[in-house]
Length: 448
Image (cartoon, rainbow, N blue to C red; front, side, top):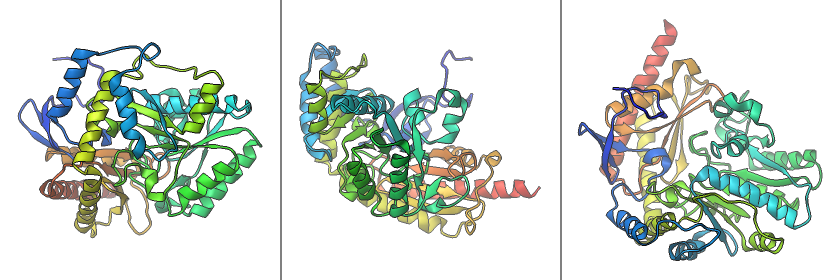
């Protein structure tokens, strides 16, 4: 039977998900899937939380929608007050939206509004990094440095500029656009600002730890303090994209906390509501907020921004994270997942690196570990691993093109923070088998 849904997958046989609890999703046929990816590294407090559903229903029954230009709401004010102490910003202010791409678009406009408020109308250039991902709206996609996603839309892109990825594993490889040390990366950013011209660069945007595009690539120590210093010295706003790394995913409340860095703007989504409601925000420091307001306000808005139900759900997710100490759980369970994966795959010649922080763990798959040579894209190794793991009831998240924008395969894991030791062991065993069988098949096919 045909479907009227324009699906995200070309797979004509997608199973129908019907219920979920903890780290498991069941389909209509009764098959269980261990959600080792948390969807798209979204679900942190676990599936099937009845208290979240109850808060959502109660709020919807009381007040579902009131436009943000006419009203504020109790759940929104309460959430902003509750999350503020966790944000690595001075006197933070939240602009709530419906997800990560909207949050990035909001951050970009906030940047421009701040510079205009200060009389610096020539500051319009924004710098991001190759190997980054910041969303799929046109502005967010242009900011992103994920070449496979950019390629079909290149004619519409080009307003933003890019520097090298903080990606030590592929530093210096042709086509990888990557550097290894904090000094090299900071110096390159300094040159990019100088090349653009004095007083023209508005912001630098980066993920604290890169998500799906580079499979949890951790920057070199000293990187974040170094780029923050460059930005401060040149009057450039520092924007931390915490859409994937926020809310404990990397073992700290926010990824930049690993390096004690305080950005000017922080963008969050995904784990803010653990997938229960479309919600995100751009948070700015009090100084940025006050300057914009003093200049006449912020010309921006979305129909579903400042949503009462979204804020209520986010508030309950935040309460659960705090009450159950799930940030600490991300540290402990992440260490187990990382260590067990490396033990299981240490002998594989096709696992180049196991990396990440907390419950954000990535594997880079290679044709040859010694040379770091990637599999050709035509081999579709990542897709084979995903299929093999799913067939055995484990869901993982794929990444491609990380070696040179075309070739390169990776798997990213981000299970809910409530994942058990037994479930971690299951993830490791199933993924280990999937990697070994898929890479062996790719090598055998290449020899024919």
